[in-house]
Amino acid sequence: MENVVSQEAFGGDAAQHVPRRALLQLALAVTAGGGFQAMAWAGGRTATSGGGAILASREVPPTIRRGTDFPMKEAIEACLDCHAMCVRMAMGYCLDQGGRHAESRHLRLMLNCAELCQTSANFMLSNSPLHAKVCAVCAEACEACAESCEALGDMRECAEECRNCAESCRSMI
Image 1 (cartoon, one colour):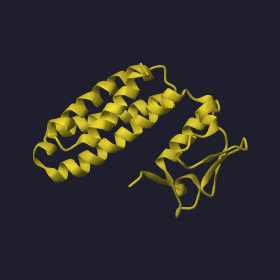
Image 2 (cartoon, one colour):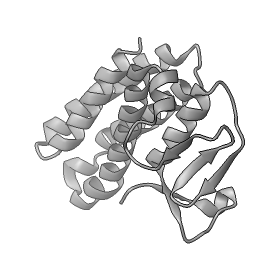
Image 3 (cartoon, one colour):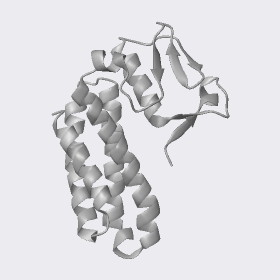
């Protein structure tokens, strides 16, 4: 299930939900615009006071393409994807499988990886001057997590997501 946030939290209709990716795109657009703009929900779109609209889809809005470093956007998305994968697999698949999948070392690596991915995304979104250092640690955690997942033999998808994130984070160093 895709991570969603109720629009009620932002004064909108509680029956409608916004995909997490749409919120990322919104945050990137606001950052790319040089600061906060008054925003309002408009059906399936997020409209800004500047008149531009950001579709709630995987398509990269033009404001992000123009105003955001594309490798950083890719790294943010890779971090968020890896975070979601590691939490979902650790709390779902690994606990259900038990045995080696549920050993503390493996679960700790997965949850540490997820936390560092979330933190790295936040540092990049805020344009922190420390994002490169956080991304370096994230890449190391992702590699360790990927190795642990591969060693189990049946977590290839998780290992691939971790390696993709590690590569993206290394590009930020």
